Image (cartoon, rainbow, N blue to C red; front, side, top):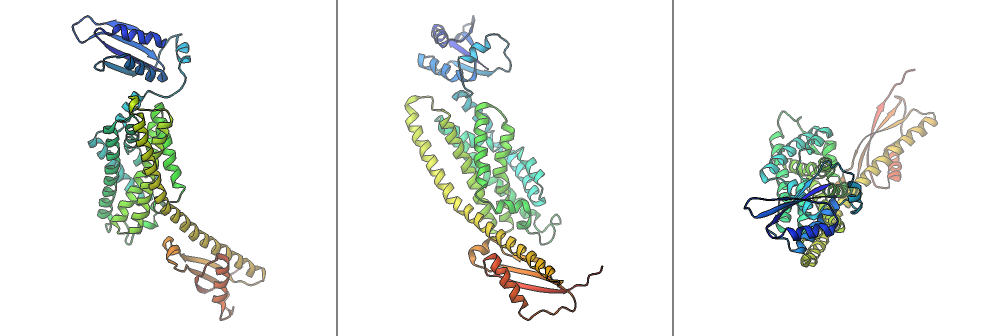
Length: 430
């Protein structure tokens, strides 16, 4: 429920009461006895869906724009008349004015925003280097990225240029600050006693996850955008939704910074692509859902202009996502190919060991390493497979044994391989 309170300018009380009575809602009037600019305070309890049409009717009737209209969320209303009142207005959507106010409140002041973002990025960077998912999730709780994303979309929808510009600026500068923060931290930690000698950031699972993104990564961003809009328009779960949005943005941004600190362009490109796709997807989802939820500018004459702006922004964002998705698609395919080769080789070696066992020999084939990286898929580099073969000390192997192993593995994997066979004489007891 909401309590709408209208500070009525002098000579306009009859106008306000006429509008309220036509709306069919209850109200009370508190008359002012001093010499101020207002002659009365009209309090009107209404359900959330009734706020926007009520405010629109007051504006259409000519209520002085210099008056105050305050909308207060009422936690509890005790009355037998509530059911009749809520039955008149169906829906869960909050008023446009509430939407704008909430979006503005979710985008904190610059000092607060950047302070929280730097702290969050520092914690997330530590979590990435420690390969700690719990630390990364903990860092996301304090990341203030939900507000700017929603502020940008709401500002466009309700034709508030200042709010839209502020939201976009906070997002762009904020992500740049996150990348810079992680780069500085990485530069300070690299080569220090806090990390082991020869530490390779690409070997850390939490970092590897951000530098090998696939098309499925879009679901996190799109889902976060949907949840953010629902949270904003229905005032539920904003903290948890903010965590989801931060997870989509801060860890990959921190990974970009670590890639800069370690001088790895591939890390910067792949993680940077993930950041851009996620932030664009969140903004795209928010724009589309808010428009289809029925939110429009306050002035009817600006609706067509705003619709044109929304349509052009959606088109630009979609085009950018499609271009960036080429990189995601390439990473997805490359990751699949490397995983497929590794799986086929491992499966074939197991089959070869089982065949030897069935034939009564004691040869055993073990895969010790497969050198086949994502970039090798596109540069045409052959995968290098190292195979450890256990054999009895007196077992003689043909001269072309290594070639036979290579041919079988190539047939199973469907690609040309460089195979290194290491022979180990093994004695078994029992």
